[in-house]
Length: 355
Image 1 (cartoon, rainbow, N blue to C red):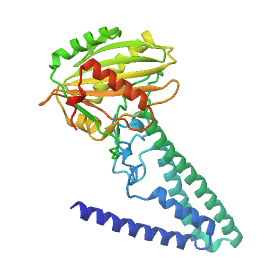
Image 2 (image 1 turned 90 degrees about the vertical axis):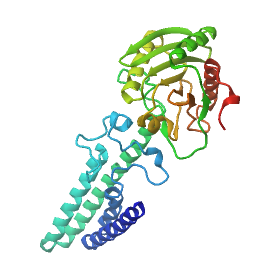
Image 3 (image 1 turned 135 degrees about the vertical axis):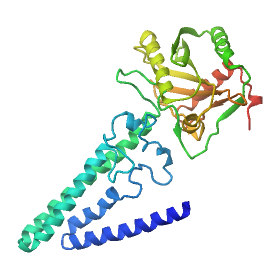
Image 4 (image 1 turned 60 degrees about the horizontal axis):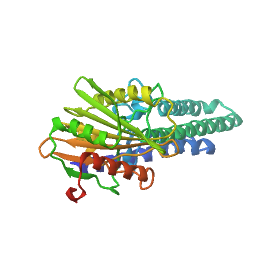
């Protein structure tokens, strides 16, 4: 069935492209500047994959089209109010305005073509340059928005902050990738759900971490420990919950923001966060957004922000999964340091890691 659908889409795309070129040739056959702009506008207006900002191997953008909190473009307000998969034009505001303008240019050009018999040849030549210029300007702006949305999407998975300019380490915590250059680290972990908090408290105290506070809201419980070294600030935040959800991640961000305002409001050093998510029951959202070909990216630099997501899952066989690093070099040193640190705190043995 999928093969038939794919074949049908290919046939439709070929037919649409043929009709598009034919219409452009008929409408602008004696207007070469407009013809070039009209042909390129196919790239902006093609209905195949209308709401996809990824093409082919760029499947890393798989969440960029979701109308939900998991999509940083949606959270940032880039989607128009009546966004839907059924829309013909783009759901993203910038691209939508450009596509509307292109449709307007096509409509006006069509009207002018009909009225050409009443026009002087020189007037039509001037119209050619006007339409061509309009096509170029709108298409350049469309390409700018397309690139900007991709850049913003990628940056959000490295660093996200709220309106108060405080880091939100539990937002956009993992990015999808089909390139399995690094595998997740799995460990069997037989510490009961109720005892994990006590174990972390004991280990953090013995390793000179400072207790920052315990927090609780709805079904989410959290504790935060931190310590400051010469080169960085190291934070460990444990979040315990029955099941994973974006709402619970935002609650953990609230706890982190409260801690940040009290202790690190003017921090200029590197900050490393070990985010331990202790989850009682797995669900579809957890597998899709954290455990299925998902990687953690880092904001590198002198004031870098680094994260290590650790998922402790207690359903069926208790296990720990440490998400792999997205980049081969960006934040690699800090990632390895945090991985070694959390292995020490949780008592994870490399001899028990699954191959």
